[in-house]
Length: 166
Image (cartoon, rainbow, N blue to C red; front, side, top):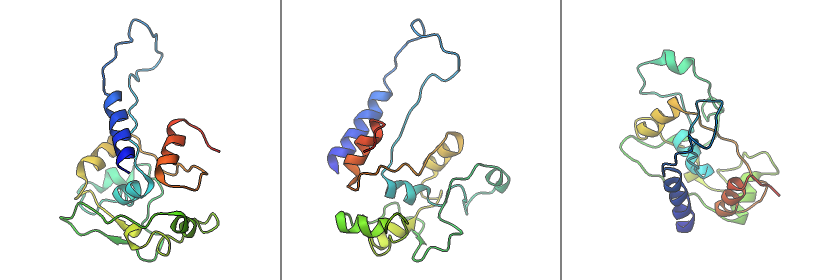
């Protein structure tokens, strides 16, 4: 996991190096940079699991007019609970071949309580990750990238970065 974290940090820092291609490339759009911050699935769901349904927001009008990703609320998910305010970490879920197959549940992806365990069934709010939620409100976020390689995050991250699936 440390190698994966280092790799993601290295790629993020590498992407921030300024490169002036203005004389070399004639662009037809105003887009100059694309920065991709990649979270492992459990981290994404824990930080953005209820996004943008912010219980602390005073401007519900903006939230009601946003394009909403599939979030965890309103799905009657057994065992789902908010991490209390003031706590900014979550326990790691169970990982490994057996846990992943239980989570997967023959493609239904509905058995996380029995596979990865209770630590996979928690979420933060904007009160705990305000900067990330603020960035998400101004930039696009994506979920539901799946690699069909039934393994841990490192291999699937490499497939994602290479835009390759088995």
